[in-house]
Length: 299
Length: 299
Image (tube, rainbow over the protein chains, first blue to last red):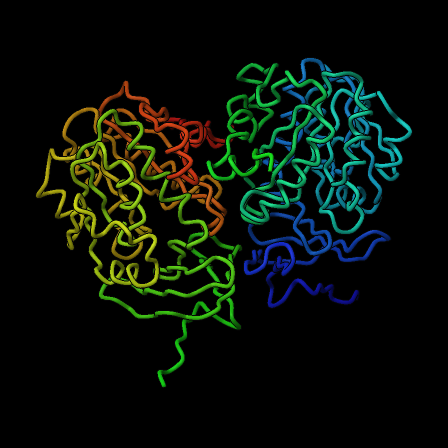
């Protein structure tokens, strides 16, 4: 009989997400039915457990990445905002996103896309997703999907000027994703776009309720590189403070990424989308007053 | 020396909000610096503590009512949505709201209001707010504010046809607020409005991520009474799942409560409002696709 699995973040049957550095004084808990997997890969501490009420849960370095109950909110927003804002997204690049959720969403546009490349550094995450999150991993075998196992930075250097939409679905800045929040990275992203209509969207690892100063810093870092930068957010209960911020950018200063330029008919929309619709696309860019004023202030 | 205060929801220096009945399998925690007050009033279990990162926190029957850090989001949305949707809100009634936060917000419209009546059953809550949440309690002595200590139901029966805006800022359906979610209550609210332009907004005690079926039930209960009913929500990290739903209704089927009919100039807006602005007013009514479809379905 295999030894009982355990994890330092799980005690008395509850997983506890806590970080003195990133969200001091608050914690979120999920009740654990069973630990399914725990191992340190070459890159990070990976935990998968079955929760009593949120389905299976993926945790990297102690931070919830997704739960089966609410993952659709994040995956749909980060994928469909750039896909529907772009008039013709034929070539799409996903950096990170090894769980497959963003890939699944991008592939819903299979009538317009030619190819989706997913570049993930940690093959462990892909294999775990296939095993424990089969609904999220449903796109890995799609004929238009190409999976590349390497560092996202290196891939961008080797593939400049190729993509219409680039989605950075990284984990947080600690660990393997630490370079994904620096100006050099955003320059590489910019230069990997086909043309000025290209759109880049990046997980910010922040939200307006946590470290607004740090969020502003990332936001203005992106502004150094792109003439058009906007902030939007997904409401996802299992993320800290219930939200996660996304930074959307383009080389075209006149392109309003807060507006969907394409749409599906009502039946297709209701059949394929649980979170996203055209009105929510726009609403996701509307911020509480003080956060808006602070974020957009140039000083 | 007074005995050390304690509370069953606080252990090892952390307050833990947990409910097998209402949000099974998830919990939210705040780190406690000091317990300031704990007593059972005639109506409910009242706890006030100073947290390390969310300021002072008010807890009724184990559920967070407000924290100094994020209370403005809830108070501003529930107050300013009806106040800005109504063309001329002169008489305003607040039922519950003993912490004073909604009163503070309504009084920001002092140029248009004649009177704001706050009806609270539990005087304990008002006195505690004055002591521990002075910024929220700042409106109690305002010349246009009238505080009535009685049951909201009874007050409505005695004051039909009097108000332009009515705000139900109750605690959750257990305890003293249990009748605030029934059809008879919404009939009383309807009949307490001056005319068809009147607007009622009620805390739903639910959100779309928790018990969507129960939320739909409340929503359709209100629809039995009012021809115009809409759902909006506030994003508030210290509320379960990071959101709380509000149900807005009017006797005027043609009145779109999702649109602000009045506004303040930019300077006044930025000076007085941290959460609300006209665009956020509209965005707060935009729901994730599946929740929208489910909630509006008549079956």
